[in-house]
Image: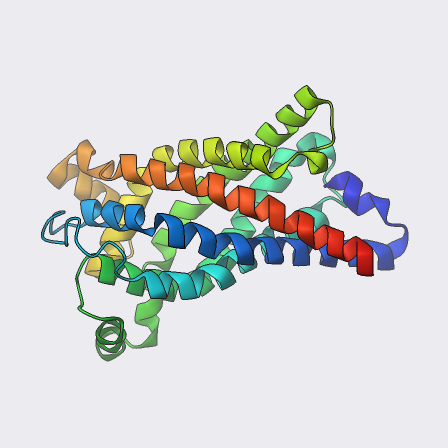
Length: 288
């Protein structure tokens, strides 16, 4: 990213380049987010029910695996657009003072900034989606009404801390790994990273996503419990509580569907993201 940001001469050019990368990220995320949710939503539902304290079958088992899809679909496009706008924008800004030798630092920082920003947009949809998946409420309207009556508007952001504490470690692993894999493939192919075909970005995204998902499953379990039970937002306390009462196995409940979901999702998401971003740059270069 450093070479892209430094290619523009003068402050105005650099600012336009930063804006262009931010818009490219937003466009790519807006296309990729809904694609993943629609295709792989049933796996996410099964994972949520496996992690539910009431048990898999009481939470719905394999029935109605598309419950809550509308909430997820409504939130996925703006959330993904927000994430990659923040991610690409932060990387472009940091390229001005963080050298390419420390690209991993840029990617970790950009991922963290993007996660904290996006969680604000994503959290209300995530709360409604997971409560519907686990059959806590029969309909979306009933779920929204219950949260408003019992918790008020802040209830839609209950679990924000646990979501951020799950997503930041996830991004710390996923995005540097994804970018490093792409750089490695580019070296093997003797091409620039930007010239890699979308399918290679898809494979890199799948590998990075699967590894990150497996490692951060305990944080995902805690986030799910907090959203479904809405009685604490203390992540360390929840981790200890689950471990003491249910053992280490409970902290990795749903690890296989979660890993499968995110590995497959990474393939679809990053493939769609890279393709959409290439379309954006084609249009940008044509009309700029």
